[in-house]
Length: 483
Image (tube, rainbow, N blue to C red; front, side, top):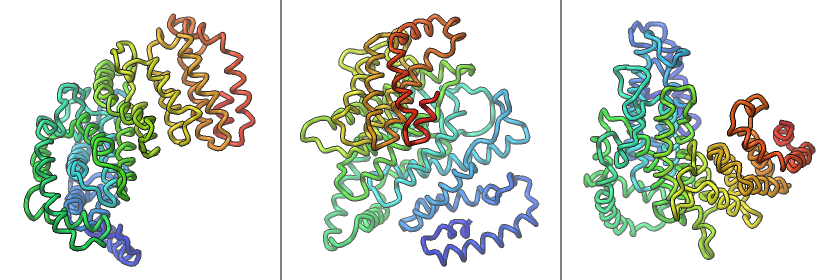
């Protein structure tokens, strides 16, 4: 494990020496290892329990170099799917021979996810913390797709899941800890300690952001005033609550301090990207017996995330308000990822995010011709596609909705500079047409029939958009137009 982490040293010469140790030692272990609990063909998985402990120690280290190496190792394990569930059979269950392997992976994933959550939950930002957020959300996303929802599960296994999906634990970060009820008190205590540490650090104003944060962290750890120990205690043998992790990422990205300090914007963007990926990982299957529970959980997450995401994105349109376009784009991306089946069926007064028609108009406005940032235009169009695919048929068939969708697409296709904006515009049209389906589906389903009848008057407009895109210089745009 030490050699495996050393392979990721920033010094090339040192990393190559550790790589030789890893390869030579791995060959010896593979040839003589006779343990019964060794799984897989990758050496990383064979030594997973030991590597897990080494990574946890690196993430807890006061050395930023050790933390960065631990992050790199963690991302590599995620990429190799060592920290992911084993393959399931066609009926959604796990083979008996893979249950011990699944248990080992779950325990390692739970331990490392807890460490990532403990690091991300701290208020200080340092170079490389965004990688911790990325690694944590990657682990959680891989397990969330099969995680039990409100205690339900299609298979009964004697393991602790790294993450669970709950609709009745809005204040939990780890299951049963009521973390968000006590978080304000812990933050106040941490801020007092930070203030005293900052006064001591004014002696040396030439240090960079990472060095200052490092000194603060060491002083906090020596004094014992930190919420990390509280998190570690609560994380012991308890899974992370999906909604609590989403809420933590949201707080870190848009509800925390300003974005004027170097390194803060990339970290906040990483948190928002992780939040979007995490919410996309839980996709209800119409054929699953837990489809109803999954949609209810999606609705629960959307209602918790949407107000803050909408407020953050809409505030960027205020005069005199300087919000980084990258963060606005990521917030809109998260809003689109959080949308659930049937969004807009029960709109609330003064809640734009709950009204599908008003939300679509908002997305058309924020991504319109006056928007200078192409990333915002792209994400607004992508979010519109998600909304079109999720809103009820009774709303989608309205002329105002269809004309707004075609207006967004037409506006985006006039962007000759950024092909991703044009591609998103065509995908919006495809999302609209996908609600109709083929001729057979439209005949059987009355809702699809009504949508088709509402779209037919705009057939020529749609065909014109597609024909103009066939001559585009970007192959992905022409391929989508041909559909």
